[in-house]
Amino acid sequence: MHYSVLLVDNNPESLQNSTRELKQRGLNITGCLSFEKACELLKEEGTIHIVLSEWEIPYRENEPETIRGLKIFKNFMALRHEVSLFLFTNISDSRSLTSGGIINGYFFKGEHVYDDMVRKIDAEIEAKKRAPIYETLVRYAQKAKDSWHTPGHASGNSVKNSPYLRDFYEFFGENLFASDVSVSVPELDSLLHPGGVIKEAQELAARAFNARYTFFSTNGTSTANKILIQTLLKPGEAILLDRNCHKSVHYGVIISGAEPIYLMPSVNNKYGIFGPIPEKRIVEAMDEALARNKPLKALILTNCTYDGLIYDIEKIVEEAHKRGIKVIVDEAWYGYANFHRHFYPSAMAAGADYATQSTHKTMSAFSQASMIHVNDPDFEDIEDFFMENFNMHTSTSPQYPMIASLDVARKQMVMEGYSLMKNVLGLSDLLRDSINSLKKFRVLDLEDLINDEVKNDNIRLDPTKITIDVSRSGYSSKEIERILLTKHNIQIEKTTFNTISILLTIGATYSRINRLYLALENIEKRTGNRQVTSSEQILKKFQLSVSPIRYRPRFAFYSETDELPLEDSESRISARMITPYPPGIPLLVPGQIITREIIKTLSMYRNYGIEIHGLHNGLIKVMTCEEEKRLDQTGFNITD
Image (tube, rainbow, N blue to C red):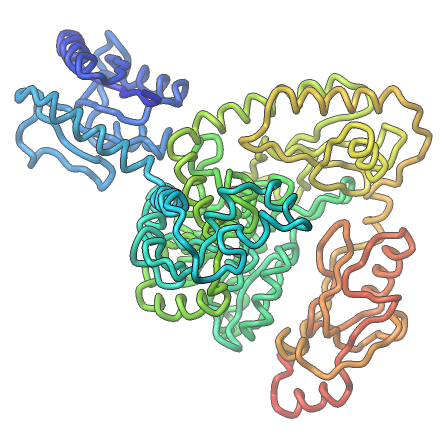
């Protein structure tokens, strides 16, 4: 048995008797006599999946103070969202009890219903650890049916005996080909119109991730973001978005025909880190847009950021909802937030209307496998339109192993997510201490990563995202990245001018973190003699000011264009997104006026040899003058 039951009682004799009876029936029981001890056990023992508690219990053992009712269960839920809670009490009058929607069941002590308790606990665990898509897919693949439908490899028959492709078959294995099946198989359900095992799996995911509805996305969070933006915004309606958001959000704005209102993130010039948007700036932008009678429908934020900076998301959601604005949270890097108290609250727990998660980035799903979570109270009114957009962006031939990986990733997080995240936090502390023992490398703390603009915004740091200052090493960050890869077979997540970033996931191990530490120690002993150019030296020349958006991005993106040298493009309108990497923030989006300051900044980046997406051989695509005149004449100049 991989799970245990926590039994919390207010009477030592009752606790002893119940523990004995339940252990005799095969349950693994941990008992205690106080709220404080119960909380301690929930924090320490990740195997606890069921709590049986009295309605009133001592706060501390052998002390008169008590805690009672829903307050007990809400505190347990705050510590471990995935744990199932049952009331085990001497109170027989249900009128004095209330479940608050979080208690899974009730047992009356006076009836001694131990067999019934075991059956219901077993049923609860079996329901939680179900993986309906995966289980059905395995059963189907093992039947070895003749395939007279797509895909063309016919369970691998086209490749396993091929003299040219047999190695391909042998590398991926029989099971992958047997499970790569067509939507023609009714028992595997349809992602585009779920009514069977996919529907069941999505409902289990919604329960696990604290949502009302969950939908599986097989083309990553990029597509999930576009689906939501296209659902919530009609052409001409406005959305508030982080200038530093993922490019899929910008593309979603183009597709939807929405008007973007860009919010400037905080900037740490010393390390080239673009952080959260100051809370004050978000509120002021909402009020200003509404005062100008903008049809502002949504706000989208990235939480946590790529570098692990976490918003005080509850407060922002509250401010947006006061103004009737829907909140979308891109949780691509934060999907595990619901499974350990260190990361609470997730977007759904904080009251956001929608969240998108890259289940493949931080959990055990295959690449491209993501989820869309919904808590919008008005969703039923737009569900049909959402499904139209979902169908528009989703392949009619999704890969079932990818869908199944979402199912098992959810199962894993529900059954062992707390233990896994607890282990990752311990590994993170160890790695930080190890790296900080070196002389030429230092892990950056929260205070290093944020600037004064957000120091009073209750920003937190996700310890699983580790940013390392390499400026004293004598090597550039790119050189260190290359040495780690070519000499030590270590691939990192990203670099800035003077930092490298690594991502700890539930797959992290002691062996891996020690190999990284030893590799950095090895680099430290080498002779590096380069004077590293700091981000501050570069970014102090670049104040992240943004010129006005003259036309909605959709109009500019689909316009007739000229191609000009960057130096000759002043006062023209960009028809493409122009983004230097690093730092990865678009300096221009379609519809934006190109200013002399932006040209200077892009030239500066280019002179430093920084990759610039959207520029080709120093040429930039701009709207033709005729297109500008046409849009001005038809009233589409949004700066007027």
